[in-house]
Amino acid sequence: MKLMTWNVNGIRAVVKKDFNEAVKSLGADVIGIQETKAQDDQVREALFGLEHLEGYTTYSSSAEKKGYSGTAVLSKIEPIRVQAGIGVSHLDNEGRVLLAEFDSFHFVTVYTPNSSSGLKRLPFRKEWDNAFMKYIQDLDQSKPVVCCGDLNVAHQPIDLARPDANYNKTPGYTQDEIDGMTRLLSEAQLTDSWRSMHPEKIEYSWWSYRGGAREKNVGWRLDYMLVSNRLMSDVKHVHIHNEIHGSDHCPVSIELQL
Image 1 (spheres, rainbow, N blue to C red):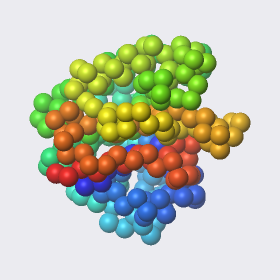
Image 2: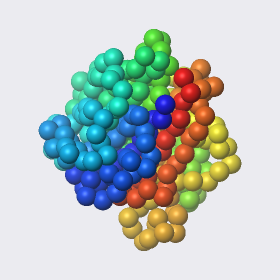
Image 3: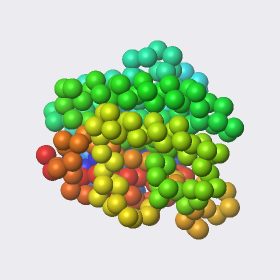
Image 4: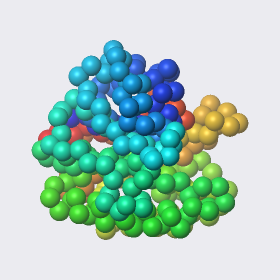
């Protein structure tokens, strides 16, 4: 079973680029999408009639604010249930979490809040990290979790090109955000599947549009496939598909042998 995550930085924009061919080439059974920047009806409209999306059913969760945030799940397999949000009302108005429950695991796609310029949204981000961790812990009580998405944090120095220049200055690489990710992994008993299988490898999943960052590979690894520890023995392959363009992020995929 192949699962994939991709922050598309606007679903209506990406479908005009490489999205259709990328979906075909990667052949995922379930795709978690972040930053749709569209309402639910606009997501369905953008994907309607795309040749290589035949066989997928689309589920989405949009933000109250139009053109902002939003998540979606595309699945070839019918979920047992689909649920938006983490159950905390003031954290659930930006469409940041979508759950699809399958027989063997919970599939969660998440678009973690960015702490914003000047770190002005860091307090909200810290509140989010704590609430999301508890949400994953609750899910994990019934079956293992695959949590995928743009978690908006580079967890270790190896996960960004210029750690010293960005530490405690740039959103996504403050100690508070690093600690939040550490707690999510340890207390929700999750494994960063890509780093577990590639402990010394340097690869990134996001590059700024400025200064030719992608061509120079000055990037960050912000996109993760986190897997419940007890499910890691079923993980066979994890890939960062940096050959895929169309967004400032690239897809990440995982293969499970269930």
